[in-house]
Length: 354
Image (cartoon, rainbow, N blue to C red; front, side, top):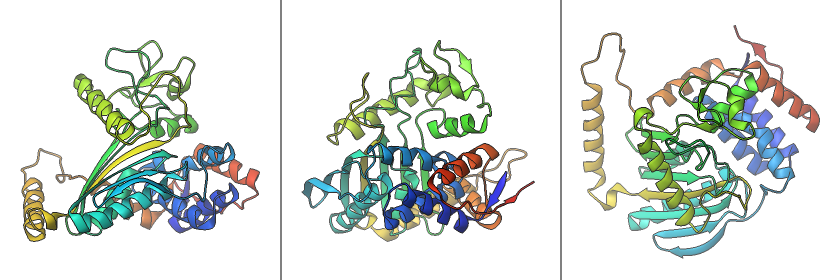
């Protein structure tokens, strides 16, 4: 398993995206975003995505360099068409505009459709918490990439439909970022590329039987990812259903359907809130700190080192990987290397980790 410094991997990712057809500024933004996802422990949203992004660029299913088109706008609302631009670029523009609006009006809601994959939702929440704002984002798969069957079903009907919420809290913002399925599809793809089994409880095959084979998800007919919730999976699936409506129907985009009519991508629903316009910043900060401290002070079960709050695992992983480098399994690194050779991009030398 290679051990790669984040700056080296960021430069490599940027070069690959430029060679695939992205302008340098967009390639640098997307490349850095992918590497930060790896640093935070979200390998499903990391550099393994680059060959897939490049394939979509080649097929004109993702179009670098396009403008964000505003469809409707008011002081507190923004509806935008991403024109199938790179998702991290276009969604970043949406959130930046909503932050401006929320600072002015107190609350801003926005939607985005016709966007390629927007990446890790928690990153957009971090944009808001960095300036003291509260946020919520949710996305669907733009009517394509169905992966999850309803409880009791054997056919995929919805995407993994993630949600993220962010709350500023000093140096330890609370960032909750999760799929409404048992796992993100990208984590299954990482396992498939690596030639590894998935943990039990992630997947069903096309007959509705539990399986640990990641390739079952991509078979014909396909398997499915279980909804979040275990014995109460109807709650996870119900949340995914609502996210599909908020993201797809409300935005002017698309909800899940039998025959997709657009490329795989995301419709986005986002809300940004300024505490100053509600109970006030001082009250908000005091109450949030008090709640976080109160929860952390809970008496722990034997063997539990500390109480973990949303954002803690990512910060710990970020600190460790920033110091030690990013670890990629042999097969995912080989795939990136093979892809680099096709684009005539130099592969950085890396030291194996043991």
